[in-house]
Length: 244
Image 1 (spheres, rainbow, N blue to C red):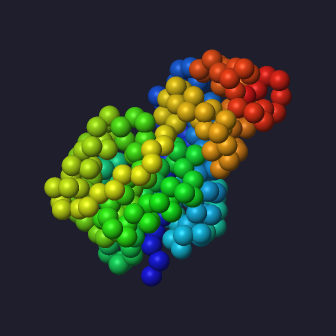
Image 2: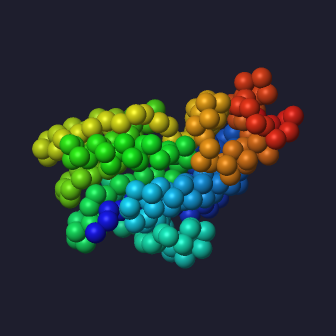
């Protein structure tokens, strides 16, 4: 039986997503940006899952948004509601569901890392040949991808969304007797300052998997508005003189 690639996502509702970007973004702009990231991540994840022999699963919060997100997700996805009082509990739930079905390995990823691409997923799966847990760190002390070789309870029973979450998860894993492998680092788009990492990735040709996100930032000139990135430092391929 093939493993799972689980994408954790929220409904792109105004005032409920990317709130750390407001201001300078207006709440509607933040929601529109997240919607673009979500669509990019879902398309890329469906393709990655197919290439790597995994079943793509979209885990949705809140539960009543399942039908809404099912309509925008590629047809390959199985859509389920997240369960748990916080992110750690919801990740525990996803692992427990996979364990109950005897489906391994399981890979968990978020929906705010639009440049996470095939090499990262392949590296995570390859790492599981020797490790029990593979983590792809991001620049804020967390991680953008988790891959588990086998079921384990209690791995995420610690505070999440903190600057020490990577080290906390790693310490918890080692306490549970798991072999841990750290992968190449990446980044999430949580604050407007993170757009600089996206611009850098674009310059290096590493943002090919997020065309909707880039187009939205270009069309609204949000690079300049949010973090002062203008034409002189922008990535090549801008679609007009006023865009990145």
